[in-house]
Image (cartoon, rainbow, N blue to C red; front, side, top):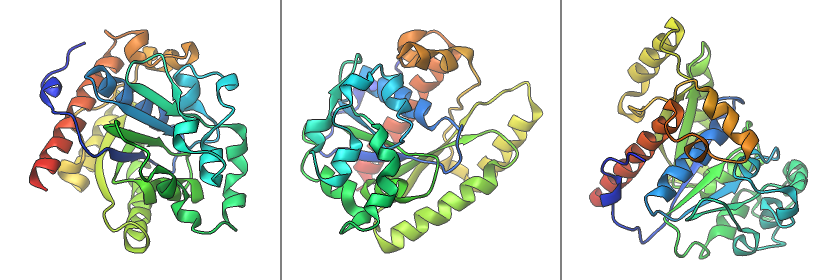
Length: 273
């Protein structure tokens, strides 16, 4: 695997928690979570994915069967299990997952009456992440209590943005939500970056969207774009990240380069703080 620069990044003492969020469905959140985590793990970062989507696609895409989901992120949110108890090892060295279970679909209603409902995930993560470098939270395609818990627990938000006509309009809602969360619950929350997904250079619309997004958000947009790629779409059905399914594919290589950007940005932020 081509890994420019990323091998030289030193181990982290405090894990960085990154929520991967966009209220719009089908933009590549789960695909990004799985493959970004895999690329990080390939350069010896210890990574934990927390599957907060009731659909459980991140768990499935990492080959975690339903028989391995007896303890899930639902149990963590309700306080019936710790993060450590819910963790499941994956077929990727250095990568674990807290899987999603079917009960998570009802968690939105159950959390309404629970004390500190917005802080359930943050409280559960406190003091339990020793040895991990990164925690990636795969959010559901909605701005409900599950996503709110992820944003309150996170240090940063990574926003996958599909190259389509309404892309900017959708992300503007998310930015407003992040601002509200910052003011009310998590003053340190920042947008780490926006990654353009499902990019097709043969399509003028993709190029127009890229130009608009870069013009609006500037350096917040990652240089790496994730192309439309059949191998990326096929990989989850085999329970594998695309980096394991077909490393030489353009989609896999794009995620390798995205990981390099994420790690370099984080290194610069830590060095400046």
